[in-house]
Amino acid sequence: MFAPCVWGPTTYGFVLVSFTDCYSYFLCVCISEVTVRQSDLKPCEKDDRVCVTDVRDCGPRRSSSEQRTMNISCFYQMSPRSMTCEWTEESNTESEVSLTFKRNRISSCQRIFNPAAQLNVTAREKNYVMSRDIWSQPHTVVLRNASKPSQPVLTVLGSTADSVDVSWISSSEGSCRLRHRVNHTHTWTQVPDSVPAHRAQILTYRIKDLLPFTIYRAAVTCRQESSIRSEWSSWSPDVTVRTLDRVPSRPPEVCYRVEKTDSGGSLHLHLMWKDLENRDAGDHILGYQVSYKPASEQQPQDSFVQNVTGVTALLVVEEGNCSVTVKALNTAGYGPAANLSIDTQRQNALPSVRKLWVSSSFPAMNGLLVQWESPTAPPSVPPVSHFAVEWCPKPRPSSCCLTTVDSILTSTVIQDVDPDESYLISVFPVYNQQCGSPQSLPASLQQGALLEVVKMKVVGITKTTVTVTWAWQNKSGPVQVNRYRVMLRKDSERQKNVPSFRALFLWPDQMHNHTFLNLNPDTEYSLLLMADNVSRNIIPVRKDFVTVATVIATVTPLLLLAVTVFIISILSRTV
Ligand SMILES: *[C@@H]1O[C@H](CO)[C@@H](O)[C@H](O)[C@H]1NC(C)=O
Ligand SMILES: *[C@@H]1O[C@H](CO)[C@@H](O)[C@H](O)[C@H]1NC(C)=O
Ligand SMILES: *[C@@H]1O[C@H](CO)[C@@H](O)[C@H](O)[C@H]1NC(C)=O
Ligand SMILES: *[C@@H]1O[C@H](CO)[C@@H](O)[C@H](O)[C@H]1NC(C)=O
Ligand SMILES: *[C@@H]1O[C@H](CO)[C@@H](O)[C@H](O)[C@H]1NC(C)=O
Image 1 (tube, rainbow, N blue to C red):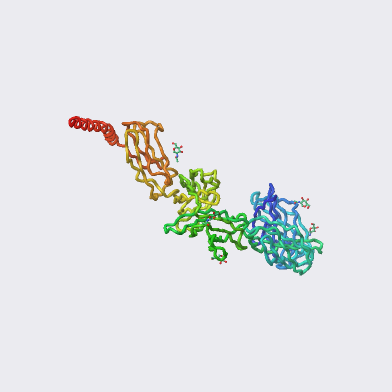
Image 2: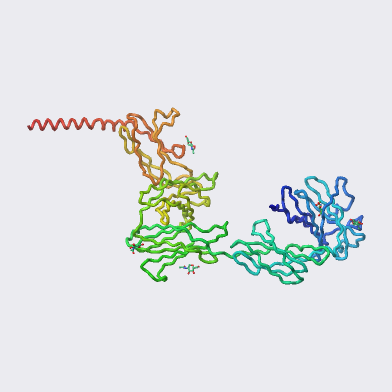
């Protein structure tokens, strides 16, 4: 395979140099192409037999210069009067090039390019790295035999999803060939056929095996075959054309969730699917059509149809059986439909995911890491088939994106997020066609999850237990926290570098209280709220509180005993 190495065109003074058909294959072998217009030629004062593109070529050659056999070939073009010469170059470094044209007698450099002329062409290359002139041997050109066919012009007649029809007029007897490439790529594909051509003939060709809905560039060149030398014309200017679209090939994978509304009778039917748009595969989706039909309605006109551009839909439906279809639309039409048969009365309660958290290490990493744990489901619930992760920009809650995650995984990285936007991220467990209720968290690339732990406090102490509570609120400061933890540490061990503590990770969807059990009695503890490895809040678990609690705990049985004795004594007295 040849990989194209991309060069110029470059202008050196008045000479236009363009490197075309330049391929690198271990060593870069490039073709230098120079086009000289007759009007750009200059005479030499002391030599009336030469015309040059660079007057520095007039005098004697420098001693450090070198002569090489370069395989020069030149073409003559009538309009504008010019010569194009090309030769292969062994180095891939930039160099300065100039041409010298020699004839027995020259009256004017402005008139030497005529079909009757015979010229000796010499090229000079100055390599910037070597700083040395390299001269070619003189190459004799008979202009009449080296004239190049004029450049054809290509037009587009039409296109389908996988082909493009083009047309052009041939300027010569011979043949033509076409090339095409995907816009913004560098590799041309040459069509295998050579198209026979007559002078002034209108030719058409169908370029086949193209990708749908893709912009292509195409060009044509023609060859004069009747003359002694047969030269290809320059490639025509590129035409650009977009192939048509194909209808979407598959139905979307849809899951649904039935939710009771506050108003009683009607229900909310949530639908969700993964976007079929995949530009790399040439897919381009304009939107989706959702239709809903209650089983009691027999006629197709009784169905309710909605066009949506996003990947979710919310329908208000009646109790009972219904059918729902979702299909994708692109410029070619609708793809196959996903069909759902839903019985709203037979809905399992499907558990949500647990311990959802979103973290970010922006700007080191450009993505949001979403992590969760699988739901703990009763045996009556079918296993999770996959997870759906949805992210909706806060200001535009309807333009959500959705990705699916295999059921054996419990995390994903969302790449496609704007650093200046905050999102609501939801994770749904999907059980075949049904989706469980979501767990959601607000998050942004700059700050990760936009929730923080506050109001941590001790609410109960016994001899061997400590109960703490906390709350979650919207984050107030711009910090990234990957994990919140609450730690109970023995004060006596604070100085020692031993990790002797009890710790608990905190998640917004879990209980907001916890009781540490089996503690040592009469021991001083501290309660720490950790944001990653930084302690946010340290609460001493007060000894006097423990003591009071201990006193109450130890006093209570004595008190009971005293009361019992008192009652017994009263009773005995009564007796
Ligand atoms: C010039 O062309 C001949 C035959 O086409 C080839 O053998 C030779 O290697 C070429 N020389 C250079 C310097 O490219
Ligand atoms: C052109 O070059 C040929 C050999 O390559 C030589 O025989 C001829 O004399 C040259 N003509 C001029 C005008 O220099
Ligand atoms: C949905 O879009 C299609 C195609 O653009 C259109 O024909 C149809 O009328 C639209 N339906 C609704 C309900 O807007
Ligand atoms: C819904 O369909 C099921 C069979 O799929 C049927 O047993 C049930 O009676 C239907 N419910 C209603 C309300 O029609
Ligand atoms: C926090 O500390 C633990 C061990 O003490 C270490 O493994 C972990 O990498 C630290 N995390 C951060 C975010 O510094």
